[in-house]
Image (cartoon, rainbow, N blue to C red; front, side):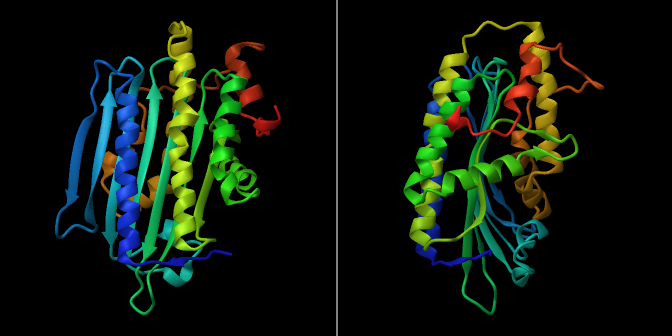
Length: 314
């Protein structure tokens, strides 16, 4: 059953303050790994007369030695009507004005042995004219390797599990399964990556505890991902690995444009397209009916890593 939590303006402000700090902490950590390339800071504001009102900050680094593209977007927008992607489970809120705020990031590393990563945390509040405001939370993180390593998968999932443990023994297995089911390319019957955790439409506790869970997941991102980057970023690679990386990035593009609810929400609601599509890799390619040599590291990706499994039992 979908539920919602009532809120007031001070609570909304506390979420926004946390998200602003989160964006800065994450970009500071990435910048410390990139001595040459710098984050471009793009502060934007929706002008009067546009479908949405609000503001945001897009921070993007391109052409780095570690990250070919690393984008971290913050947005806080208000609109006259919730888009269909937000009301499919809440038909009673169809047509209600809304406020949405969140941080979303995607990092596309240069080295093919370093996995791509995605993280998003958000709050959406409906503001119906004839009822009190209600809100719900969503988010999570997931890992998309090109060349998989069991220890990286176990580490990533262990940090996710530890972030959710204070909120109930059921949360990690439940959100892990949700992630596996969500980040699935239905048109290819293929997982996007090795998963992580994902939750949406969440309002099962009171506001403070819902928000605390969101914070715990968000704060787990850097310890979940950066140790993997440090282990893999200096591994030797060549044309073969680069070609495979670009081919697998094509799958990432397909998922984001065809299936991702966050992308659909942003585009349907009149969001800022340039910021919404910061998740796209700078380069990708497609090959017709490509197959990998049996027993190769490339074939192992789909045979072993892109299979739903309990990584903590590995």
